[in-house]
Image (cartoon, rainbow, N blue to C red):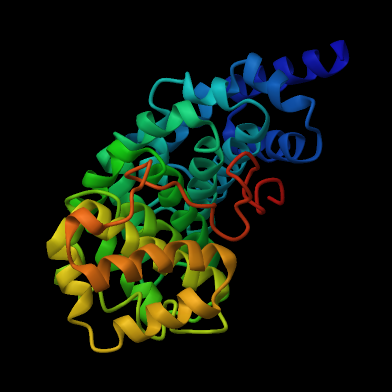
Length: 329
């Protein structure tokens, strides 16, 4: 271990003296292939150098390869030593910058995956979610037609991690996450993306501000259509969509119930899901159907938690595991 510690110090010293173009590829490989090296590199002080390279004033002057190597190294370090990353001044600002052009697409994907990895730590969610620049950049990454599939997936999963902290949801709605995610649900057929998007929608529906946002994008219709629990081949989509509507009812009250009831096929679809859906889907559709039928607040099902934390999106495990791409770069 002492040999590895000396190696880590030597690499960081060379990063200062020789320059990033030569040393960064070696540090990246070390952090990828040797889990023991990650905390040693962090202890040696590599993280502030990586953050500096990604800052908005510096990143424009370094090569795309160096930016990619820096973001990939941060991603690998986030797996083993997230606390060291989060304690580095300027980290979140650097990641926010790295999410958007002119950052190379692969580096943007690394930055989104790094955030998703950090969000596996519950105490980091209010910190990351309070950074408007982070949420805005993630939403823009999802919205951009030039974004790669893996970048979109990791960005949506990062948004899910942010949405798990209830106080973050209002700002997410204000920034426009509802419209962007519903666009994915309606238009995107890529494997896993719709499921992940509906999981975030279900979380965001648990805040009062979400009802108006759902109305603007015909949101109460979206989950009930072919992109949500009306699609029998998407069990998790059905569960998430039912949870979204139930959370919308719990947070939006009678107005939300009325909006849902106005959708022509809503009751039919919810009833079918309550009778034939998965156990988890039935647990959401049943109370939702009761609310739609009664239309009276005093008859709504009691809910011990106003905001229900759903299972994480596909591939995200329980948000205690890193993204699937975490150590593959």
